[in-house]
Length: 117
Length: 114
Image: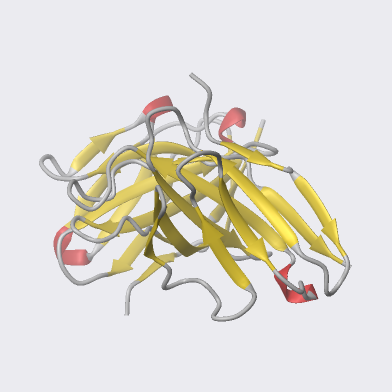
């Protein structure tokens, strides 16, 4: 049973470029979460999605960041016009349960390490 | 405000020593509690979780944690650590009825010397 897949594992972007991070949840999981880990800090929640719906985006920066989880295909975290402060590890997690049954166990992917030069 | 605090940022132990990593949280309402581990070069893995019932929970690899509601704590313990336990450990809390968001502590790096 494949785990949560994320690609790319490493991404280098110049300031002003766009970054697209992909996440494929575990088989049978329909809830996806994105977290960001800055150096020397814990993971910070960004957004929670179900298929075609954003459930909670309270941790997303107001500008330049967006996320989607289409009916078909992986979840995408998109960062437009990247700046040096966006350099971080971005982790995706998936779970089977969501609102109705509490948070459930979240299974994490290996992360994408974004470096902005 | 919702928050999780891990007391120790960096712990160094010798093999066979006992381990206790502190975790305190601030959260309104019923909570679900988790400990995750991140071995060098690997992704986060769930060590153990508390949803309800017995406040002493046992996880993988000999780890256990005790939920003390009155102290808002969920400390992680292991009687005898091994070199292979060298990793970063994260405590996390989520509400039982919220959207699934987990709030993480800043992590504790455990280094076990052979």
